[in-house]
Each structure stands twice: as C-alpha cells, then as structure tokens.
Length: 466
Image: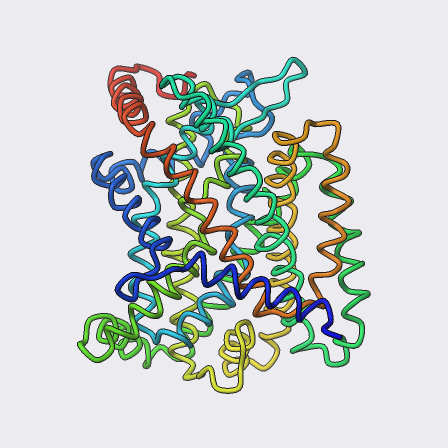
C-alpha cells in the first residue's frame, strides 16, 4: 500500500504539470511574472534605479516616525520580509539552478531580480495604501486587502473578493510549503551533511524546530519583527563573509567564472541551457528566492509605521537586490570558483562542498547559518499564512492555523524533498496570478502616488519630517 510520501508526490506531480503548462517551451505562469516585472519597470520609469538612493536613506531610519500608525519600524518590516526570502533559496536554490541550467542561469536570475525590484515596489506600496488599522492598533494588510479594496474602488467588488480570497487561500498553502516544510527539510539536510548520525533523529528534529518556532510566532508581528531585525543582519554578515572568503581563496579563477557566466548566458549552444536554468528553473528559483510578484512581502510591509505608502514601497525594492542580485550571485561565484559540480550532490550539498573545498570547517558554519536562515523564514511565513487565514476565517481561528503550521513543520523533515520543492513552486507561482492582476489594475494609482511623493520630497525643507 503506497505511503503518504507516494500519495503526496503523485498529487504534486499532477498539479505541477497543470500549473507549469508550456507554450513554445516557456511556462505561461513564469512568463506572467517576468512580463509583469518588465511592465512595472517601464511604467514607473525605472523606479528600481532612480529610487535606490532614497531607499537606502529610508533603510537607515532617516524617515522613521514612531508616532505613525503601525506595529513595526521601517527596518523591522523589511527585516521580516527579507527573512522570509533570504534563506535556502539563495543557497540550495542557486545550486539547483546551476546544476540544471548551467552557470548561464546566474545571469538571467540576476536580470529577473533587478526587474523584480519594480514589482516589489508596486505590491508593497499597495499593501500600505489599502491596509486596515484596527481599534487596538494592530494592522491587517497585503494583497487580499488591496485586491478587495482596489477592485471595489473600481466598481468591481465581486471580482475583488474572488481574487482576494484566492490569494489568501494560496498564500496559506504556500506558507505550509515554501515557508515551512521546505525549510525544515533542507535545514536538516545541511545539518546531517556535517553532523553525521543526525538523520536518525529527523523526526525529533522537526518536533524541536516546531517548538522553537512556536515560542516566537505566539508573540505576533511585534515579536517576529524584533527577532528578524536581529537575526537577518547577523545571518547576512556571516554568510557574505563565507562567500567572500571562498571567492578570495580562488580569486585567480574569478575572471574565468564571470566569463563563463556571460558566455553560457548568450552563446548559441548554451542559450538553451540558460533558458532552462532561468525561465524554467532559474526564474522559478528567483521567484522562490525573492518572491517578487507573489505579494507575500506586502503583508509584512503593511505593518510598518509610516504615513507614506510609497516610502515603504521604495524601501521594499531593496529586497530583490539584496536577495537575488547580491546574495545569489555571491553563492554562484563561490560555487563556480571552487570548481564543485552537481554530480552526486543535491541542493545545499553543492554549496557546502564549495565552502568545504576552501576551509574544512566552513560547512559546519554554513549548517548553522542555514538553520538560522530556515528559522527566520519560517517565522515570517507563519505571519503571512496567519494573516491570510484570518482574512478567510476570522481572527478567532488563528490559533488553529498556528497548530496546523507547527504540525506541518514537524512533518517537513521527513517528507520527500522533490515533492516539497515542486509544491512550494506551485503555490508561489499561483499566488502571482491574482496578485499581479491587482497590481496591473492599480498601477496607475501607484504611478500617480509616486509622482506626488517625489514632488513632495523635492519641495520639503525638512526631509526627516513625516
């Protein structure tokens, strides 16, 4: 009799064929996300470039105002959203993309990340614009609110409710997959690669991880924001240090690695590999990595203390840059310069081997970093899922979600990895369908608000004032 892994794998395989339907070899769902990022980049006159400097100023607190409505600071909101994206997608996902699509995939992944900055700006601006501030001061926001509110303002309330409900349902599913089971699965794989014998305790590992996560998520977005704002800088500092050290030890191979990335991305023979690695694999990994287009980050940014939705949106555009352009490229260069191939290795093992070829104990440090990445991602996605669950069923049932979330987390360490990866991709890509419909529909309002905001900045005598 087939076990639970067999049933799960069969179901996911069927859904995967339906979701990633191809025309001319290109999955329609992936094209939907890429085209949207190009459209928003052009529609908003390259906000991903011209808003970058201002985003840095917001990041460093120049525009913070504790008296503004909200639950967390600009930085805490970004740290929460970033902790949900910077993680195993940057480590295991990049390795998978290179293994399947070659080094040319790295170039296309970077391009998607740069374009995704504009998409992230739109969805996070809308998340702030249509958020709801409750009498007790708590915030509810995200695509489900700007889909419902935005389409209602356009005289299409029924369509807005359908899209909002669809997004919320898919986000709940994604929180169990990409933000939960995948994280438990790959963090365990990283630890077992270093600490032999741990695989015998995989069930106990899942239970222990669930207990630690439970201690944080019971405190809501305020506690999640505090934990994330401390964890994210520490994780990034350690991981970037590992990458720079690895690349530095193989510095002579760096020019060759960069040349190979560019050659494989554009050469006639390698172009097919680049397309497979990015449009069929790399873009999937990019979406999984920075989540631009899925709308999830808008849920975290909606809780920020700011009177200016555009300001938070501009801050949010830094996320794909940090996540994909910076972290993913450092991972790729560390792998490329170390000479590691994907033969007989899977996901996180490729990156671990690249670090291990440089310093023998680096994989142990990586394993700890991976655990922290996974932990931070899980707590952020628990908030996303909880907010969508509350939208669908009411806040009185959020405790039920938390219990189910923790149970799924415990199970994540023992289910089949390939099925978990495919399930995560399916949920994330499907989230982009209703979300981007709303972003397209409301992009004119975002463009108008952006123009007004920059005009206000130019005439403002005291920029730090709210």
